[in-house]
Length: 165
Image (cartoon, rainbow, N blue to C red):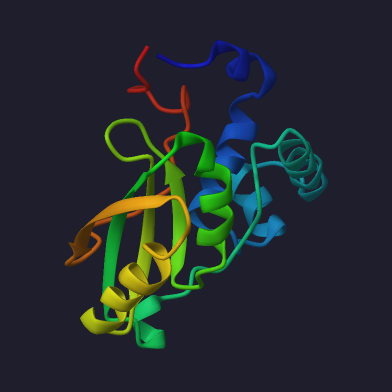
C-alpha cells in the first residue's frame, strides 16, 4: 500500500531528486540538474521544499567501523523490568558510544540496539558492564553479525512500476 497524500504533495521530479540524493548525497546540484534535465535553481528550490517537509533529513557520511578497528558487530535485544522505564533506558543507551542504532520493538523484547566492539571480549564487556548495568534492564539476547549483506535507503513509492499498488 502506498501513501497517495504523499503522491499528491510531491511530484515525480521531487521523488527523482530524493532517489538520486539517497544514492549519492554528495552529487553537486548542477550535476543533478543536468541529469534530470532541469535548472540548477529548480533543484535548489525543490531541495529546500523536501528538507522543509521533512522528507530529506540530513546528509551524513557513513564511517566504516572496520576501518576504525571494530571487528565485531551485533544486534542486542533488551527486555525491560518495567515498560515505564523505556525512555530512561534509551537515554542511558545513547551514552554508550559503541551503540549506533536503537529501536523500540514489539514482542518479548522492548528495545534492540546495533553495537560494535573491537573484538568479542570488548563486545561482551559492553553488553555485561554497560547495557546490563543500566537500571531497568532485566535481560538481553544478542546476535553476532557475520557480515552485512546490503544496506540501502527505503524505496521511493510510486516512482517505479512495482510500488505495491
